[in-house]
Image (cartoon, rainbow, N blue to C red; front, side, top):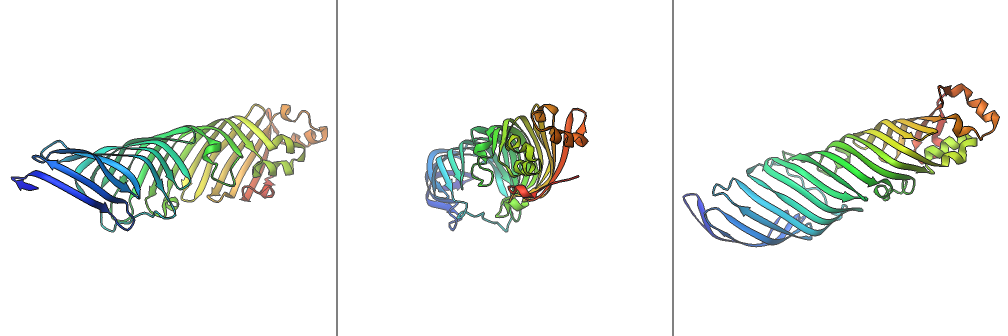
Length: 337
């Protein structure tokens, strides 16, 4: 490879090139690139990303080499979250040119999560990694959005805006032993979240998620069973509930979550929840408001219906409860009045 008056010409060979050999983020890159007056175009270049086979294409279409076009593709990427840790850079990254392209991955396994048809459009310049758009399929639905990552000194700082469409709730939560087979429906919504790309990604997350769930269903949850213990005449009616629409608005504060509004709507019953809980599903506390119509309780004993009269407001019986502790433990639900 020769250089004359700022112009490179010749052949560049890369054999076993890599980045961060300890973690093997990029490894075993093999390429032979022909350069003419600072311009080149090479496709089908093999390399490994955290041990997964990938291919890239790279091109410079301007003699100024102000921008490189780099596209990456892979049929399948598997990341073991127990073994793969974030690589920390103590010095800020400052790329002296623009690098843009598209990343396509047919399948990805990140720990126990499964995603398909991943596509990401990016531009890297200076210390900014801008995500012009991304999309992938997850839990029967689609997630897309945009964002940015600041590659300054210390852990990279990420900001993402997400749109969620037609996610099957029961599939999305299937890996959570406490929630599996308890919450059903089709969810859509949006979220904006900031976090640190480090091993403290969950602890540093800050943001909000707002969503709706159509054809929602709750089965045998701690909240339902707790209400059934207190209102024993309603036990079997409350155990398996279907809702026309569920609405949620939750602030993300690290591994703690503030429920601004969680409303379960059906024709004759509503459940409204606000309060705090954590990643281990411990409430601290949750305020629960159970709302019933006369039609919902019309087949119950007269004495029970009479006892509820003090909660009657307009067309609804509005009964307050509070929950503190394990959200799966029905005994943690108490009357609030």
